[in-house]
Length: 294
Image 1 (cartoon, helix red, strand yellow):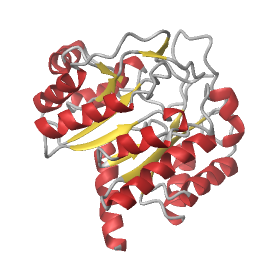
Image 2 (cartoon, one colour):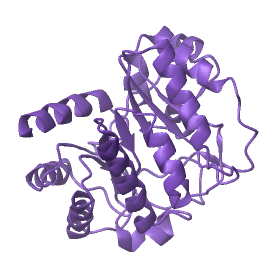
Image 3 (cartoon, helix red, strand yellow):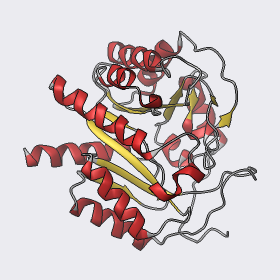
């Protein structure tokens, strides 16, 4: 399907690529691995979303450009490298995501904790947002990561419940809601502030009513931050889903307004919105909204 005029992507120039690759120090980014349309804008601003635990995912979701395959063993030096890269980039707010590691007994929970602790030690003032997998629904492993106290704990439901089986490999809405619930309750019991975040893609065949119903479900589980963006089929990947529709910018604005009306503290909704795009702005706005509510 031909992309409409409102899908405009800033190209990544080689000078910016070279400037960013040095402080990244060989670390993977979801910007590059997932072919994010915002890479030109974000890297020009000197920000990137780090991707830990390798570049091979043990799941092969039909929307994702990250390679599927047998992962390499975890790099025990990665937490230190991550912290060093965040320090060299001079970030005030860092977003870290991961590939799914179903091959690991703890789904990578221990590595997540090591990464968060390394960043805290090297860059104590940095606000940290993590975007995790579902840990196969393990309460022990979800709690383990939440207790490392990132400022934002994110896990994406990706699509509406009706389409999950055709879009997400092994991912299930009930499992995802469990992840978000356990993370939230861990923070509540621990008496610390941690915002809970999720994300949806549009253009996979859902209706706007289904999207609003999904948003309502997330609010029932006290999710505070939400991102909504356009699904774009990965280039040169015939095995991936086709785009069914390009909702208009006005529809995204309508969903943002609806989200705020039903109690989300922050909603980022536009065709090129991605989980980590301008995440620091959404976090600041939502934290201010939470504080106003008391």
